[in-house]
Structure formats: structure tokens, C-alpha cells
Length: 371
Ligand code: SAM
Ligand code: SF4
Ligand code: SF4
Image 1 (tube, rainbow, N blue to C red):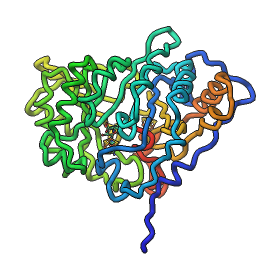
Image 2 (tube, helix red, strand yellow):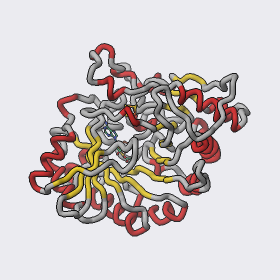
Image 3 (cartoon, rainbow, N blue to C red):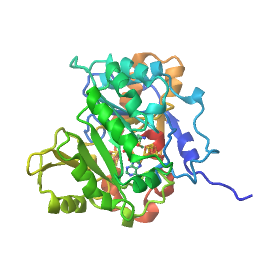
Image 4 (tube, protein in one colour):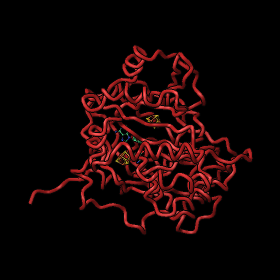
């Protein structure tokens, strides 16, 4: 029998246990990393499972029925997640995004949202709580999510053509159901809904204009994402990346665009408005234009490992502290020490990196730490 190699297994296991520094670091809301970047945005993966098999994220050949997903006992409980999130908020986090895997597959996710919605920023304001979903369960859940305290949702949708979308999600899931989910989110008050479209050259670039036409004037903000070299299983190739500049040019030819100011520091998307005032689109150029300089995002995996970059090869395991009796102050100190040591800027370095020095096949999967 031929041996099946799953490179990410080692990556998940490879994490340093977080340690409490001998000199405590008080939470002042003003924590900076080694490059002076503040900590503002926490992305929490609530499950490593998904009901889709998008080829750029969880290809079927690897994520099959024998794939060793995390056992339930390894997952952080909602109380543990909220406790960790509270320390991040004390260090300055203002925005929390729930992700996965498919976050709506996590049972009773509304309870977690309620707990997170009760947290307050260091200025005493509620957090901006959002969620990224493939939309498959959104029609059913939108109202409850809103009632629990969710502010907005981002829905991933890679095309309007049913055959193209069914092939990209690779589980034959129809476009119409996602569109109904988007509508339900809007009706529930989870807007403005952002729509994420990963553009893969040779697969769905012909869907760019139909998507732009469809969402123009609806209040939804369509964002085109460059296909990224995350993980180690999607067989990423540079020639399948369609640079955002090309996407903008393509849309501009038919639907004139003007560039808009960024809405917030550290914003990943470059904003463009329709010249006729009927709304805006965004482009996320993680491959062709690095935005590490302002990157204020931390990522917490489903099992409590902290990643300082989407392309990190190693996490910092907070679970031993959380389950080992550390106090809140100790946990906060440990998180502070990790963030203070952060000098990650993978996208900036990628362009100048010789292939043999790139992290190549050793990166963590997007479905594990979330987008
Ligand atoms: N399952 C949810 C979803 O699809 O929205 C949340 C998790 S998913 C990992 C988060 C985002 O990452 C999605 O918008 C997805 O399209 C994007 N994504 C996944 N793999 C990607 C890749 N290789 N390049 C660019 N974006 C990717
Ligand atoms: Fe699932 Fe989202 Fe990854 Fe697609 S992008 S496989 S929906 S986690
Ligand atoms: Fe942030 Fe890493 Fe992406 Fe740079 S490559 S923007 S540091 S997540």
C-alpha cells in the first residue's frame, strides 16, 4: 500500500508551549510587536471541519474520510475561547472574526458569540464581532447570529455560474443557496455583507464581471482575493494568481471605478468605488502587494495555538496555560511576551525569497487557523 503523506500534521503539532515571563507585562491596551505594530484584530478558528472542499483550501485528495481532524477534547471550549479573547482585548484588540473551517458547523456558536459580545474594549466599547462563512447554513442561522450579538458577516462565493461554483466547492453545492444566505443576512441586519471571491486564473476569472454586476448597487461589498500560497496541500502556482491590478482594470473597462481611502489602519482590502456612486468593491492583494507593515492580526487555532502570521510555520500553544491553572494576569503576560517578539512579515519577504528558502511545504493550513 502506498504511504499517504499529510504534511500539515507535523505543522499542527509543531508549537512552542507559551510561557509566563518572569517579569509580568501589564495589559495597557497599547501592546506593540517587534516592528511597532499594535494588536487590534483577533481571528478565532472554531472548527477545523468544513462541508465544502474548495480545491484551494481543503482539496478532497487530502481532506477525505480518513483525514485526522482534531478530536473534540482538543478543541477549546467556549469559556476557554472567551477567557483567552478577554486577555487579547485587554491588550488592545477591538475586532474579533470567527472563522474555520466552516464556523457555522460549530454547535451552538451563538453561545460563543453572546459571550464575546459581552466583552468591552479598553475604551469601554463593544467589540466589532464578525464571522466568515461559506454561506451554506446562513439562511437558517442569520437571525440567531444577529440576536446573539454578531455585527456583520463575510460570505465566500467564488462565482455566480452554478457549474463553476459547484466545481470549486467540490461538493456540488448550488449558488442559489448561498445567495439566499446572503439575503437572509442582509434582512437580519448583518450588513453591509462582504462577499469574498478568490480569483484563480484558469478557473473562475470569467466570473469577475458577472459577480461585479450582480452585487453592484445592492449594498454588499464584493472583495476579490488573490489566490494565496497558504498551506501545503493546494498545489499553489504563481501562474494561477490573477493580480488585483488586473481585476480592477478588467472591471473598470465596463464599470468605471475610482480609488477610495482605506477605512481603517491595517485594512487588508484596497477599496474602489463605482464612479456612478452605486457602491464599492475591494481587492485583497496578499501576493502582489504586501500589507505586512500595518498587520495587526493575531490568529487563534481551534485548539488554542496562537499564530502571528497567516504563513507562520509554528504556533504558540496557550492551552497548557489555560488548562494548567495560570491566572488571567499570567495568561495576559504570556500573550504580551509572544506579541512583543513578533517580527513576521512573510508577504513582504516572499517576493525576495529564493525558492529554497521559502517555507515551501511546511506552512499551516488555512482551514486550521482560518482566513
Ligand atoms: N469556511 C469559511 C469560508 O469559506 O468563508 C471560513 C474559512 S475560509 C479558510 C476563510 C477565507 O479564506 C475564505 O474567504 C476563503 O475563500 C479564503 N481562502 C481559503 N484558501 C485560500 C487561498 N488559498 N487563497 C486565498 N484565499 C483563500
Ligand atoms: Fe471550507 Fe472555507 Fe476552506 Fe472552502 S474556503 S474549504 S468553505 S474552509
Ligand atoms: Fe500579516 Fe503575515 Fe499576511 Fe504579512 S503575511 S500581512 S504579517 S498575516
